[in-house]
Amino acid sequence: MTDAPTSSHLMSTKPHSVEPATLPHHPVKRVRRWRLRIRRWWLVPLATVPLAVGVGLRQLSQPVDAIANAPPLPVETVALTPVEDYTVDRQYTGEIVAKRSSALGFEQGGTVVAVLVQEGDRVEAGQPLARLDTRSLEAQHQQIVAQRDQAVATLNELQNGPRQQSIAAAQAAVGDLEQQLALSQTQRDRRVDLYERGAISREELDQQTFGTGALDNRLAQAQSELDELLAGTRPEQIAAQVARVRQLEASLQTVDVDLSKAVMTAPFSGRISDRAVDEGVVVSGGQTVLQLSEGGATEARIGIPAEVADSLSIGSAQRVEVGDSQGERSAQRSFAATVTALLPELESTSRTVTVVLQLETPEDLTLGQTARLVLQDTQPTAGFWLPSTALVQGEQGLWSVYVADRSEDAAARVARQPVEIVHTEGDRVLVQGLVEPGDRVITAGTHRVVPGQVVSIPN
Image 1 (cartoon, helix red, strand yellow):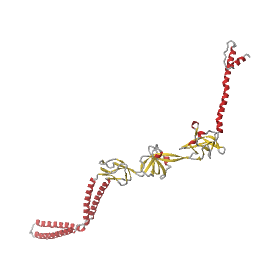
Image 2 (cartoon, one colour):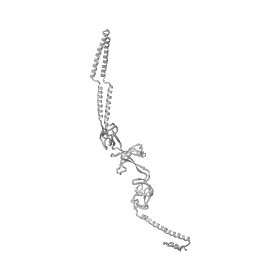
Image 3 (cartoon, helix red, strand yellow):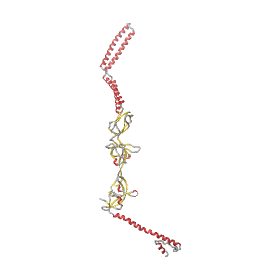
Image 4 (cartoon, helix red, strand yellow):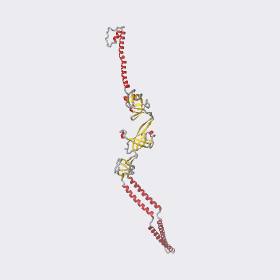
């Protein structure tokens, strides 16, 4: 009972000074009083905690009640439709090239006297482009023409045979020699008779005999010439002369070819992309003078993976985009194309297969432009397509959507369902998650709704 006054004194809100005379002189009692005073002071803040919690819960319940009691908020929704797969556009890059591009030069060397085109000029097939100096070739041409004419005249003479005058002259020569031979034989016979009688010497007889033999040989030669004239020209001589004429004609054709090659012509229609030399330059055979790229036949050469190339076939229709991918979309152009070739070897650096596509272009494209082949790859993945505005970002990078669960005729309650983004395509996404076909997902204004809120879905 002696502690009661002390306890009531400690419960006072104002501290009082303690007189030393009033404190008990026993040390244990003094410690007990101080411990009791400290415990009672701690009871004051502990008593205020339940009061604060109650006030906070009351304040937190007011917005929830306000949302629940608020009129239904009209929202835009979309009904989920399941899909079993989706397509991905994969782009492969290459460049625009001419179907044919030639570095034009002269087959033989010479001095360039004229270059008839400029860079960028359009030319047609067969159009002259440049010329070489041909004066030496023209002189050689004239010389061979003269030799050919001479050989042709000789051939005509051989084919026509000897003239009648030549035959008559040969016949006269044979007749004259026959008479001379007959006279010489008569004189020889007389010389033999005189020698036998000793009237002449042996030497005189030998002279007459030798003269007769010489006349006989001359007669045989003249007769042979006459027979040759009467028989005409031998076939071998005619054949040899014909070969000579043909040889000269071939030489003439060679010079004509060289003259024609001294004029450079366009092998196909196209555009001059480079002019390497000007007039007065001495060029060697095969040296590049002009670069010609075919016009109206544009190709795209694009490298694609080998496994993708297996899905393409020769003659299949494709789409090729041409233009700078870093620029505006309007600057890019799309053209229909046809696969014309799949090169059989992998490109050494990129390890890709080169596909050649013939572009159906109404105009010439700038060579070297970037070309992109767009191929669609189908992925067998089930899910639902949603506009990207329907996504609600959650914690730790997770995503969810608001589903309007219709419970009344025109009102529905919002529920939050987690989803996983499978694929993004422009302004829409393919998702999987705790949603089902037919669920109505809020697609706009997701920042205005919360789970549990009542919303209305316009018909």
